[in-house]
Structures are given as C-alpha cells and as structure tokens.
Length: 380
Image 1 (cartoon, one colour):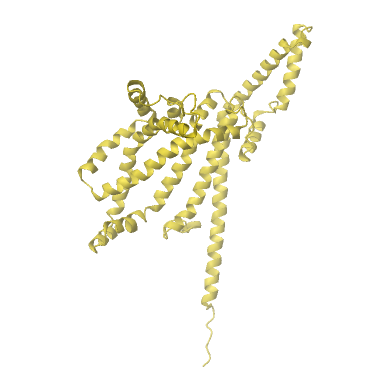
Image 2: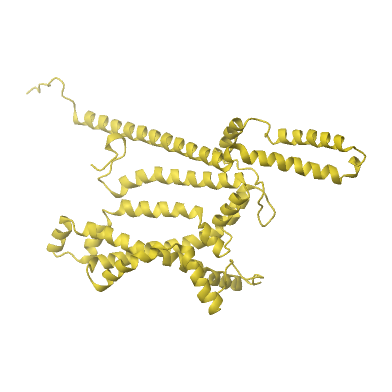
C-alpha cells in the first residue's frame, strides 16, 4: 500500500535538527549580545573612574607641578649648574620639565590622555604607581595589588565563608521552628547589624586589647615577626580574631534574618505542604523543595560576595592597621595615585562582568525552568 505524502509535512528528524540549530543559534546570539553589553558597561564604568580619579585632569596638573619642582631641586643642588644666573636656571628647568612632561605624555589634552589611560586599563597595562610602592620596593601596580591581595583574602574570605555557611544552616533550622523562642530572638537581634564592622571593631579593641590585654590592637603579625613558621602562624591567627569577630558581629544577625525569611517563603508553597502531607522527611523536603528551587539565588549571593572580597573593607582595615586592598585604596585616594585606583577598579570590574556572564548559564544548569537566549532567557 503506497503512502501518500502530505504537502508541507516534514519528517521528525528534520524537525529535530532544525530545532537544535535554532536553539544553538539563539544561544550564540544571546552569548555575543550579553558579552558586548557587559563589555560596554565595563568600559563606561572604567572611563568614569578615570575621570573621577584624575579629577577631570587636575591630578595631571599636579604631576606637572611635581615634575617641575623635582627638576628645580635637582638643578639647584647640582654643581655643574652653579654658575648659571637665576634667569638661566629657570629657563633650564622649564626646558628639562617640558622634555619630561612630553615623555610622560602630559603635553597632550586630557581628553586624549583619558582614552590612552582607558586603553591601558582595559588591556591590564597598569604601569607604575605614582606614590605608593610595595614592601619589596616595586612601583609596579600589579605587584603592589597582588601583595595587598593576600591579607585581604585572608581576612575577608575567612569572615565571609563563616558567615555564609553558618547563616544558611542556622536560617534553615529557624525556618523549621517558625515562631519559636530562637526564631523570635533572631528577629529581635537583626537591628544590631545596623552598626558597621569598624564600629564593633573599636569596641572589641577597647575591651580585649586595651582593658583585658588578651589580644593585639592591630596589625597582621607581631613586631618583630616570629622567626619560626609555627610562631608566625599563631601570631597571624591571634591578630585575625578581632577583625574577623567585628565583621561577623556586624553581619551575622541580618544575614540569618534574611535567609530565614527567604526559606520561609519557599517553605510556605503548596507543593511543600503536599510533600509534608505525603510524609516525606523534613531533610528531604528541605533539599528537594526548598534548597533546590532557591539555588539560583544562593549561587548569586555566594558569587557576588566572593567578588566583593576584592575591594576589601576600607575603614575596618584602617582601624586594625590591616595591610590589605581596602587600606591600599584609601592611601591611593589620599595621595591621588590614579594608577592604583584605576588598576583596582578595572580588575574588580572584569571579575564582576565575568561572574554575571557565567551566572546566566549556571542558572540554566541548576534550574530547568531557566532557558538561555533571547526572550526565553527567563523562567519558562
């Protein structure tokens, strides 16, 4: 018996192949569009940072004045120029200053220089710092930032990891005991997080360092540093106690309250009540119906918090004399050290843009309701 082919009918294999091609093109188009949008946003943010850090060109004028002052001092102190008259010295200083200013590119209009700074920043050609140096004497911005990155990660990463996991675990427990004494206590303690970490840090220093004398006032290790590795490690841990405690005290209560409220919203859904009615264990309900749907938010919170570690904690590091990125950024602002400010900002901007870009695809992996690409890049 012959099979009559209906006009316009396509084989299932052909339909599947076309669907896969459409999906692949949609993902590629979305990826390129998202990448370009994030890159343009980063460029605009970095360029605004350059304008602000340079005060619209005023910092470059300060650099010109510094160049002239340095050359004038050199000419006044050099014996080979002692026979020159004051007028001749001024003329020589100006000639040498113009040569140095041209070498530094400061003879060009600021608008041209700003785009030159932007190109260097985007290619991570951070150059040399103008005022600050590393402990080894290097003026390379990359070396200075990397040297200060380790203390910042040690302080903030320790605090963040403790806060993140303890807050989630405690919040899950409180969401199971809604309305209990501990739940009401956590709500009552949440306003204590209104005070910043440096505020708690000052009180901790007064109590445990000034009055009791149990812990050091600040710094990263004792002075002079212990000669042995074990002694150095113990001194480091001792110096970490107060700043980590200050960060934890300033954030733990509001973090627990936020996660507890978030989990309560999911635990009140109808499908959770149905799971309870079926007699599923509480732990299975939390894993399948509370934690799993909330994974995109948990991952986002974790990823953005990790990126925020790069900026450090400016005032807290100043209070505890902690040699991290926050203190470095403060010193750079005080000294108008534009390369340090721009270098710190561009690295943070790149990390943030990459994180946001990757998160879009992570969402589709952990939550099947999320589709990547075009109008489907939302909950289906």
